[in-house]
Image (cartoon, rainbow, N blue to C red; front, side, top):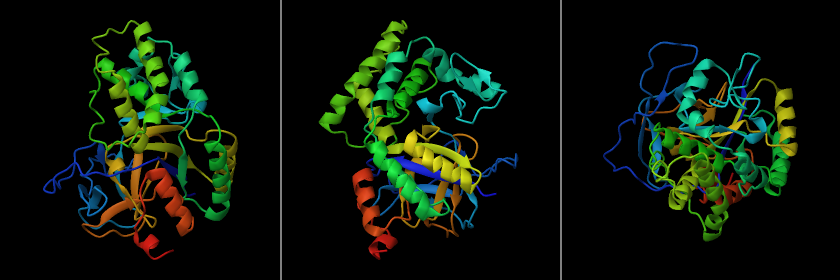
Length: 360
């Protein structure tokens, strides 16, 4: 039984080179080519990060990669469940909960290991009352979502359902996701588990003056939550309005919407229909290396999630040495004009991939 997944990236994506041309070595992220079913020592992933001719940084193969091969896995820098799934998935890894979950304060973890790993943010987080902050995230939404069904079967029918759900979601208030990720990172910085500059390597999106003004309420609620929990001014020195806006800008352009694999066509249709009524994603996450993959409407790689927030990058076809690895940010079954419109409005660029240049 094949795994069916959905993949989504958020809003404007502007690539600007950060690495010099001489820096072509593979970066030491929490990334491997290890298969989950093969507990042997993993080999370095067959990839390198380098500058492209027109899209800033990109990911390139260092050897031939076969169709269907696992290129690498990546653990998230940040992950947070959707507010609608907070009681059904692990608060740390987003794995679906079973009857053996390990409970925390109002949330649950899938294992004792996840509960221990969550200490990097959870002990700080539970000192404060986040009711007002969560309500703010629940009642406001400006974040358009674009789905890719490159990995879906029966795309035409599914796309009709998804298109309808996107229209509804763009007109409704179902919850901000970026502030939840900022809250988690803030807790990690206060606990000493992360640096305030953790996401600086990621390219930020451009925020308009109006967007910055809209974020002031979220910033105020976040800071007051920590202040009321008696977190000292010294511990919160990094938590300025400028830092908050900077992190939002980076998360906004690099966050992945995680919808774990479903097991059958019937599950897929049920899940697609559920998008119309409610937020279907189990959560959202930010990764280091996966965020550097550029877009192509006819991609040679894709990202999947099987059990939890750990991302798996797999080859869709045979890839030659030194070939750039690209994923699709949107629904690849759309026609040329629809793809161009979605990418320009949602990600901030005009696609010049071979498929688009051919007019297909």
